[in-house]
Image 1: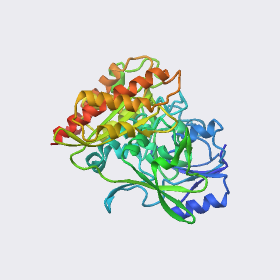
Image 2: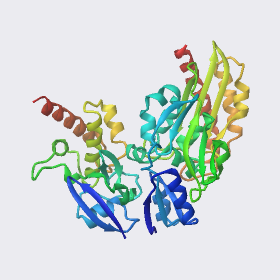
Image 3: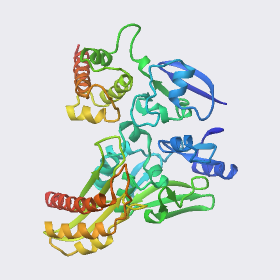
Image 4: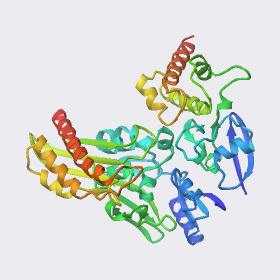
Length: 159
Length: 290
């Protein structure tokens, strides 16, 4: 067992873990943060996307120890109490989910994209979410949702 | 699977840890390949030595006539680097095609090389750039041409249980060069290529002064199409010449029939097509740069 210290969604945590546990496993099984989904388990689909120090990674193939001393943001870290984050609300309003299993990953990829590029073109958006797969929506509503989120975040910034 | 996960704080420390565990420890950077290989039982090492927190290995810089890229530099950082986009755009193009953004954020170029898979975008671009790798051992450091370290599918002469690649370097491309990176894959993102062609072309007026063509993964390792390169020198840059070079390059391809990547016949034919397209695009780029 090894000690893992990290900050998850603003809270410091200290855990004893097996050195080969992935970050997705630690978040889900040890911290109960099951919003992070494991779908392919091979870093191919993006459902498990979380941010480490603001950078999007696939947590299913990230050794949990890589988060030692780092700040991790998961889907649970976006909403405030019962109030959805702007990106989450934009996904709801754009009907950008069907089964919903890929949605947390898409929203975290969107967070990373909009943090780096607050005013993306449609092509930028498609590029930004190209690490995430959805088998239901056909992507159009998801691209709309990201564009809507960008627009609302810009409006919020102007207020 | 793993008994320990250790962070090295210097290159010397990493090498010392490898020596201490006598083959049971292996270096890990992004881990995008290694974690899966380990889970599938393809990696015997039980101790991971993480190199991503060693100071000084995260640089992309121009020094002593070379561009140097440290072992921690990710595909995303290379794709976004103004220096690489200016002085070696072919490498930025290649790195921007790897996996998706999340994979590019974690996976390193040096890791891509050491893993030695033939379907490696970054490594194919490094073949066209005649890149060299700095290999650190407890005895000292040496530079090795990239073509020397590939020994076959997934086989690299550099043993990550004993030695460490600390950097990759290559000469910047001259201003008059045109580049093209052609990639054939089953979809546009999140997939390995079935074929990649990287071309760097240098011209004087309408005449080809020098040509470099690297191709993967249609043989056990990426390779340079040297016959095609030699054929182009001194010729006028035109479609028929590009097609001849494509045929010469295809003659050296040895792809296997693959359910994932397509038949040998198809991919061999496509080598000719992509080489021709890449040369035409690179020639246009040369004209544009004037």
